[in-house]
Length: 305
Image (tube, rainbow, N blue to C red; front, side):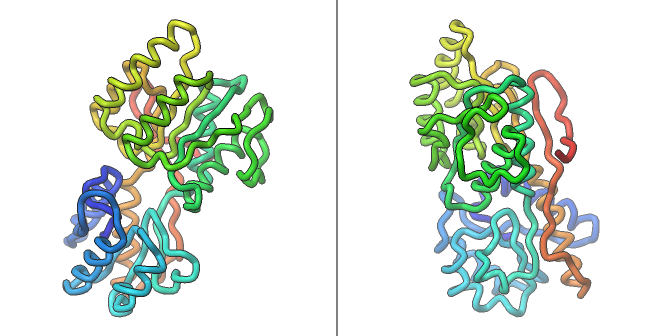
């Protein structure tokens, strides 16, 4: 597996899932790449190194589709290539055999269901996103709006404006929250400037460093508690660690929705295994079961909306 970066929890867990599945068949699954902020040149170098090894297949989480296609992926024809988590752009998808990832529309609908769980009468919503030019971010946001509006074919372009009691202020969603520092700054600004009933983060950026989150967000939430205006904070995550789960029990986060990255890793292995055997595969394998973490409760697997 060649992820965007090897030190991010999502990819660490996907690598563990791949390794666990491989071990059952006497195979090996490696996680190859660089640490630190994702960069397509570093990933291209990791791909070049992977292509020098005696591998039966490569699973790639794409950083820059066109650039990789023009460089390392020019040499990939001899080794079966699939993508996971982040796919190649349509113009480059002929280079890969299949894709494994979550069903982002369904994932967004699950986030919307959690919002309805905490605020069944509706309310003011703000979503923290990464780059909205990324298709998977658009699809998650669209899924949230479909669920809350009750309009299955809601295209996700227009903000909610009173449908079933839900609305989004003009400044929301907030983009480029994909670093812990940026996400905490945006969340602090939201909590300081106006009332929200629900805040959803489409990634785990705000809680990547649980102690920093507690120090920066805790006092703000305590003040809102005193005014009975504490929003429900819902965060898309990857198997929250002990520090992140402690935030639930302290009331600093109301729910995590785990993207089931281990299962993405397991299914990536099985797709590569079938390719290595010369067996047919589906072009896409979408994971549509996720894990909900709520305060003082065991994690539970979601049902499909």
